[in-house]
Amino acid sequence: MRRYASISIELAAKIPNTAAAAANGTGWQMLDAPVAGSTGPAKEGKLGIMVGGEREVFEAQRDVLRTMGSNLYFLGPQGSGTLAKLCVNLLVAAQMSSLAEAMVLAAKGGIPLAQMGEIIAASGFVSALITRKIPNMVTGDYSPAFSVKNVHKDLELMVHAAHQQGAALPMAALMHQMYCAAMAAGFGDQDFAAIFRVVGGLAGLNGKN
Image 1 (cartoon, helix red, strand yellow):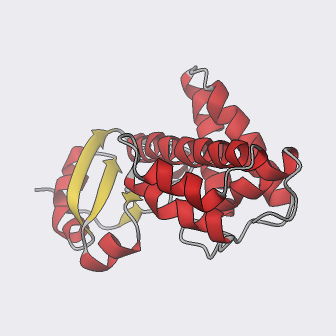
Image 2 (tube, one colour):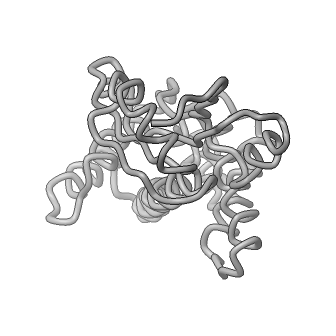
C-alpha cells in the first residue's frame, strides 16, 4: 500500500468539496469523515463514521477510524461523507420540528404538555430521538446535547448542498429559516429542542417553556 506524507481527516461537517479544494496542490491527502451518534457512543468508540475521499487513503486509515467508530462507511469521492451526514441530520431536524409543532398545537388546544408527551411516547411511530426530547419541551430544560447553532449550521450546509446538487429541498429551507429565527432570539447555545420556543412564540405561547 502506498505511503502518504500527510493525511488529514476532517470530522466536522463542512460544505462538501471545500476541504478537497483547500488541499488541492498542497500534497496532502484528505478524508472527510463526519460522525453519527451522541455522546454515549462517542465515549464507547461506537460512532458511525461516513467517509469520503480516495479509497486507498481510507483503507490506510481504517485502523485509526476504528478507534472512534465501529461502523465505517466508505461512500465515494471527497465530500460524500459530509453529504451523507447532512442527509442524516435533515431527518433529525425534521423530527424535532414536527415534534415542536405537535406540542404547540396540543398546548393551544388546552392539552397538558406532559400528557401529550406520554401519548406520543406510547405511539407506534415514536423514535428514540423524540422520546429523549419530549421532556425538554415539557420541563423547559434546554441544556444542550445538540445545540441550536449546530443544527442551524447544518441546515445552512444542506441548503447550499441542495443548490450544488440541483435538489429542491423546500422543507429544509423552511427549517433553516426557523432556526435562523431561533438564533436571532438568542437560543443558539440551547438544545435544538428549543425550536419549540420559536414555534410556540409564533402561536402566542410566549412564556410557556
